[in-house]
Length: 434
Image (cartoon, rainbow, N blue to C red; front, side):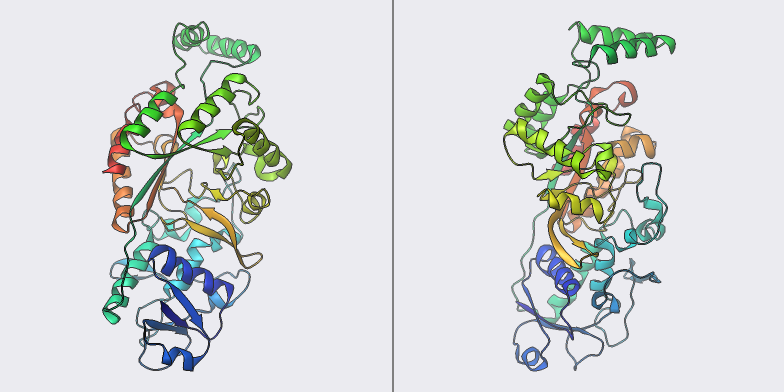
């Protein structure tokens, strides 16, 4: 056990120390505010306060972890062996910056509580984040800092038994449209035919007709292939199903359709399943509750995980709603427009609610990339995308973190905007599991 002396044990101090020491470095940690207890401790120890007690392992504390609420902080970026960092310390400090305050700032999404401009979907944008502005969005800097810190700790206390965590990979699949044409209402299909006709999309008219009359398999029905690849590469796969009513942004088939219910039941037999809360559920808790109950009535089990449709969430309100509904895991932590690490970590973490200054029971699983980001936002080719995927995987593997990807069943269809992307998912699995 590592003992930490600090002048005040706040919820923020307890939260971030446990994340870095226990969840990232697999080290047990305890705290004391008594100098005599700290001095008497024979094992590894460090002080986290304003002034060093003596020649101990000392990290000069920034005020952030002893404050409440949010303030507009001025962040001055420096380097720690070429790795960006902030909240610099003095010469007596064993490391050149306050790793704990900086990590808390990033992982709590402190900056998202401050006034900011939202995009057309009401989302906080990557471009406003310090990680994007300072060029470290595609690096899990909290994990990198933690392992650099561990190296200093090992040098100071070489006889202590240090464990090593394992790299993990999770493939997540969002089901925005289970089928391209099949099982949709007569009105939607007739409207689709008319729309394609006036836009002279002759091939789309033929494809729609061929699928409806069972001459061809529906293009988006790629579930058998996803399950086959899951088995072949031994992948931990999670499906998130959209259960909302039809809107401009929620265009899936009705959750009341027997074929959709059967599909969900089939997926439950082979993989984990979660809720994909609809576009407008972010502002309506009753809608969110209704959609959760719909999924539970189909799976006959409690829904414990979710990911917001369009990645729409506001902090802390959206997460507070999920907690109220006893959702235990959220997979929304990422940007639509950019790949990388929104919370600057590739380690799942518990959401810290700055409004109430508590660690919540909601565990956040940050993803590193999304297929639509690569195709629609970054305008990359499949080959270019594979390069970015490999780079991100290598960043995660270097710190033995958890590499999480977000794809859609549509990506494997080789149809419409996904023409030429059919093999990317399997290629990604090869890279992620190698």
